[in-house]
Length: 173
Image (cartoon, rainbow, N blue to C red):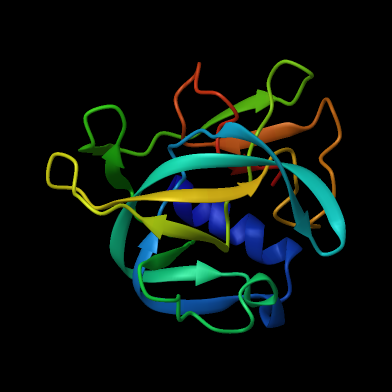
């Protein structure tokens, strides 16, 4: 139910032309956090600190931002897109066992950042971990999935990552 509410809120803020449904493999980073790489990543002409997250690769229907994916769900060989999904459970670190996705909120601050990995490319890892295909995904830190601009300090962030995870993947929905 929470996922449906989040999806409904998301659709209110983004026009239908800005969404694309993909079917196939995708990385779901909803319960992951990211580690800064020390590099910058450009999103629609704006520079952000880049973060890298390890995310499970799932198969099925997912929701994408076509503007960040050249209007195509097709990823190059050995890669996969990090996309949004309405699944209610997924493999999660550190064991990569399947567990329920539990939403929480936190306030963005100088010490508590967030990551946006929606519709960014990932490198599939060569071997599975505990039977789960994982991907190394790269995306911006403190960038809004709704506006592609910088998220203001004090904003409320929604994530499925547990408390204590560095730069949890989420958004200012």
